Structure formats: C-alpha cells, structure tokens
Length: 179
Image 1 (tube, rainbow, N blue to C red):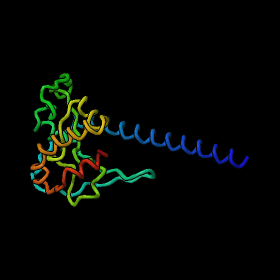
Image 2 (image 1 turned 135 degrees about the vertical axis):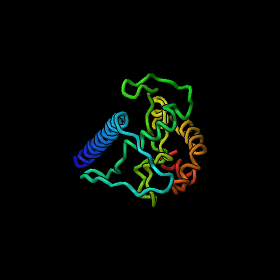
Image 3 (image 1 turned 120 degrees about the horizontal axis):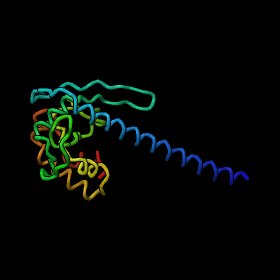
Image 4 (image 1 turned 180 degrees about the vertical axis):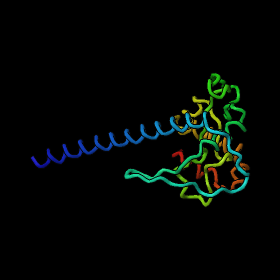
C-alpha cells in the first residue's frame, strides 16, 4: 500500500510540474505577443551607440522580469528596414499600422540573462528583426538549426554588441539557447 501511494504521488507530482511548465511557457509567449504589439505603436527611440544603463526589473511572486522598451525595439526594426535579418527575401505582409513588411523583434542575447551583464541588453545592437517564421525557428527548431542561425546572427551583430559593451563569446550564446 505504501509503495502504491509513493508511485501515485510521483505521477501526480510529475503532472503538476508539467502543468506549471506549460503555464509559464504560455505566459512568456503571451507576454512576447503583447510586446510585439506594443512595438507597432511605439515611437522610435534614438539610442546612442554606447553602453546603456540596465533596465528596471519587475518582480512578482513567480519570477523577475526585465523591462523591455518597445521604442528601442522599433528603432532596431527600422534600422533593419523591416526585413528579416536571416533572409531579407522572407516577406510576410504589410502591417496596417506601420505599412511596412511585418517582422518581429528578437533579443539575440535573451533579456532574461541580463543579470550576467553590466550593461543593458535592451539595445538596438542586441535586437534583431525576424520574420515570424524565423522567430519561431530560433525558439523552437532543433539544436543544429538553432546553432546555424545563432552563428549567422552573432557574426552579423558582434560589432554592434561591442558598441554597447556587450561582450559575449558565441559558445555562451549557444548555452543561453541550450544548444
């Protein structure tokens, strides 16, 4: 009887963990969707190409969230001419708000790793413009495909990251993405 109880407890605990993980993953995706919508209507920032102070952090019972500035993301999308930076032939549709090709902003070094850096990661030199398909690919593709994309973007953005004093080897970026 005790053994059966232990087995049931393990199964139930495992399901609870899975449900919690699903909840947090969905919550992150919803927050990112909201951020992408905020970018469309945000005024464009004009960020100096030098290290920027670390953004504020919001805390809740569940976790800490680094604040992202939609205006800075909009600046990065404009600098990329609203084209996918993995392949500029990836055209989607014209946004009815910006009247530009629809793309999404993505932090090459994810903002959740801000505490490992002395300067802000929320800068144009760390924000890439991606078509929705490539944006999903960088998050959900297999490790081999993600590594190819990350290496390409790292080479493209290494100097821009350096302008903002964000110095990180490619191997660390692979670790951030669990590659």
